[in-house]
Image (cartoon, rainbow, N blue to C red; front, side):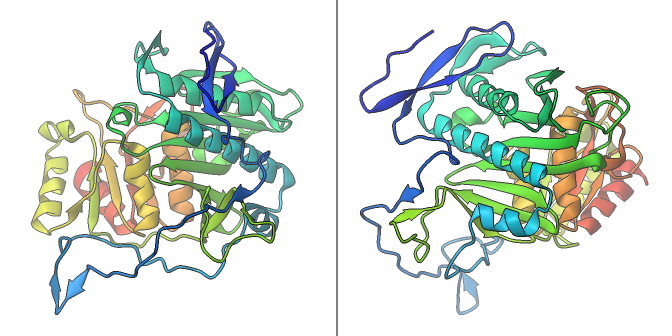
Amino acid sequence: AMHTAPPNTRPFRTSPPVGMAAQTFAMPTATVRASAAPRRAARAVKAARVARDVRMADGDAYGASGTSFYTTTEKQESYDSLDFILDAKCKDLEVKMVIKEQLDACADITEALRSALVTVEGSENTFGDAQLSVDVIADNIMWDAVRSSAVVAWGASEEEPEVKPCNPKGRFTVCWDPLDGSSIVDNNWAVGTMIGVWSKESGSGENGLIGATGRDQVTALIALYGPRTTVLVGLDDGVYEFSYGCTPEGCQLPDGTFEPWICSRKQITINEDSRIFSPANMRAGAELPGYKKLMDYYIDNKYTLRYTGGLVPDVYQQFTKNMGIFTNPTSDKSPAKLRLAFEASPFGLLVEQAGGKTSDGVTGGSVLDVRIDAVDQRTALGIGSKNEVDRFNDMVVGK
């Protein structure tokens, strides 16, 4: 249905999934795709930035608890653009193209989240879950991106786990969870998009997914939509983070505008040890004595709990804090829910590329080595700092 746009807006149209009518959403006129937009103009007024340190005073913490982990990232004099980094760190031109297309989609989802209300859409996904308005918008944006791509041959969405043809001349199979965190987005908490990219030549079938493993991915992207939009991307020599719509001082271009995407962090690493834990599926502790024992270990050793219930923010923090452990074991009454192709594989690729480790929660081996035999295949997961994943394997998996 067409909705009347309020003043100073333009229609933002997305193609519908099968069985749904086309929808048009009112978007602000300033909202444009990152690649097609003129570089962002400088803000007319900027709040004064006053250096302030509330972390420690005379050896005592104040203003925050002593268990808080603050950023150690220092301001840079300048930041490299997306194109500059991709030209230097992504030698495959078609991989570079699909990365830019997916970042464009993440930019569109960012703008949609800023203007759309979180309401029940009146439709259901293939699992019978009620779809939210933002789920549908995000998924339509992702489908638009892959169907208009010259390099994507196949696409699959977590909302409707079926691999569908896109461009027969394309090279890649792209799988995504369009908006992870549907149960917390109404709280206005951080949510995200997870994207895995395989060659269509991977696996045992024509679509590049069935029979493949997460290790066959050519790249992965994880977008986090919070106060800022940041995206982790796997490049030739490590994991990089790109920030959308930022206007840092000293980075204004000669014409007074800014790049849509800048590289905010390079070659991110995850330490072997962690003091932060994110325990999912804690119900399984009633059946798995080892998992309850692991929770007791974290508490007894005064680890810091950082858990929202959203996979993207709960694992993404490992790249900002350079440490962490996310655990999601499986039991008979609390089975695994994470999807191997749409969630575990993209995150697994980036975490291992950054020096972390993963566990499939069953054999103790890497989740990247689990064969994808079904589009909607589920998996248990331990992911994060190496020594913490080893502890998970030892105490919970028994490996």
